Length: 307
Length: 291
Image (spheres, each protein chain N blue to C red):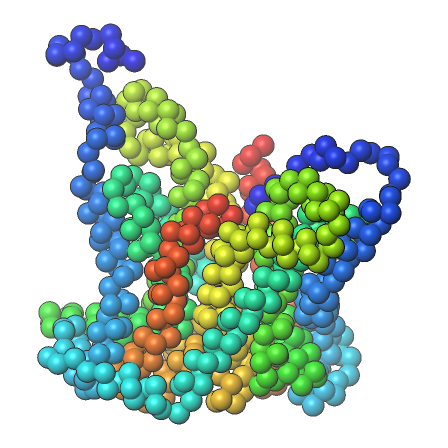
């Protein structure tokens, strides 16, 4: 993201023995970090290790458990429901990520071209981002339902209703991806807009003078310069896609017949419906590994395209 | 360039010249039109929520039309039903207390990471940042079991405290405080100020802009949070608005009542956004906070 190098400090010389003042500064430093460090140890580090540990047990609601080693993972390998959830999430990501990147790129380009009303339009387009996925789900249920807004309009035109949330997997996941993208594109839009603002104007003007049209300017000048920013957006949106839950919970409940049953939904069910904490923890570890792997692959692409 | 070679008024003007000039003078009506269509798509759904909330129950809403008469019945009914006010209070407590605690602890840690030297400083800082790689959902089962063991289910502390370890907040505070000149702190020390005084009198006042930005985001994240409150709040009295709205959505409440509930949940977000819009939008571009 941003470089984390400290500015050079002229006041500190190398090789100075720590004075009393520095020592007191050291204790102050430790004490000031302490509250956050305690929070991190208890609520981040311990659960991270706990997830791995718990996934090797058959941890129950009662707190009883015995170590079963890789049984949960073996079960996962043969679990049709888990496979379905994995495929569902992959298909959803394949729809959501391109959609949200294209929408945020298009809106960023429009905002970048604006010379009037920039503040207003930027705010208006960012608006859904400050609301919850639950609210987005409630609004879009009213729009997408069988007796909803869109189907009401096309029924008046004499066309059969479209099964936005009741059809096959592709139809349902596309509808959900639209809702998530509508709620979520604002952040990527602003990141891309900041990137566009950093592109030197004279490069584009030179391209114009060389007779490049708008499309050529975008493909040949803007996109190559924007590549790192686009990759950053790709990575964060991919990670977001694999964490999809709220919208599904509100709009389809994982249905119809598991068409929208995502990985996090499977984890939620195993943990809080069947109270099979060991297996749910293993699904959590799997989600982490998938997200980590995808970040690595995308990182590799980024490094290769930069070299 | 070439425009300078041709005398003004001659026919040799290049086609690109007017476009270059237009970039600075005209307001590009085409772009404004496209932006207006896009903004229509993001703003109108919210207007629809409010219009539906103010329509009488059972009024025809498909195809969408303005109600014959406006009514506050739905809002009153929702607010007086069950635990709705309680949910609102819970959400406010969850959000506001989290904001205050995150800001204080993150500012303290950021100050130490930026201006203090102590053994293990870098390792601790990078281990904080490393947690960004772990999605919340991956650790939510052990986290739930841990909070359950500490008897935090259905309590405010169980809801709030596990969400305070926020590496983005620490990272941003550290970056910002690094930019403050060391002389400030040294001068204060020479004047005999204690660390705690320096923190409250120098660090916090000087980091107000970043504290405000972070505060807005932490508030919105908590106000809109869903999965964590869903599993920690197991009784109806402890629910937050998002969880309550999702539960109303599953029950057979009328469209008008559901939209009234939705309207109430979103009002604080819209207020925060309306007042601080420019601020939020600029800060995302500058710092890359991710919700």
